[in-house]
Image 1 (cartoon, rainbow, N blue to C red):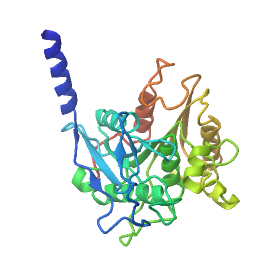
Image 2: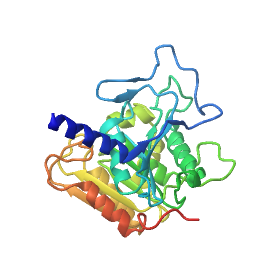
Image 3: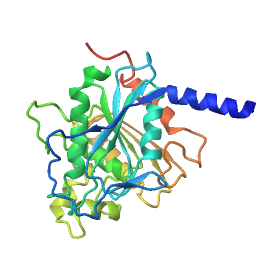
Length: 307
């Protein structure tokens, strides 16, 4: 009985440590670049909390415990080869971890590229990522967020989306009458898909730009080729033995950051494979500790929201 009571108290305490708010639709006047979904194209979530066939993109806010927020915020992009969203271990669990260090997190449920529901599937996910950043920046005061401390984190194909948001922000693909910046202030890329060239994850590439993309499309979405001096500071994690998304993806991006004099930090695990989320079972080290230190060292965890 004592064990059950203790477990219950722990569960309640964990739940109270953060606050999951109601999901917020990204678009108030209709989803851009969309066409009517076929009858069979219906959003679903399986037993592993993998979401598929998204037609109505949202962000779900996760707020730190009262009195602990430091003004920083992050948009979380789960991975899944641009075919599903691994919404639990690369979404909710990540948001809750950020809450523990005072960062307000927003899990992005983005549309997965599909000719069935989009006019141009190659820009659909980016539209949703830009809309998420715009929404958080526009409503920053409401959430006690510093509009200059809004980052993005992505895992696997979500890392490709995050790195696209961080390198294509000058090409705004959504309506932006208020001219709100869609540039993330920092990026965190965890075993990310980066290149669509030699070391590409072919499933992600084909889902986003098709089986026979032009050379120009391959270059455009090989994000190591899109880095400039204005690319946000970046934190990277990868495992050397990743057989799904080769470690060269992170190496290429890091090399591009160095060449453009962008602040960056990269950590490589010897082992760990792909898709480990928060905890790499092959290592005693916790990459999130390194990530928190990096955020702190770069000034993103200091103080509250700007007035």
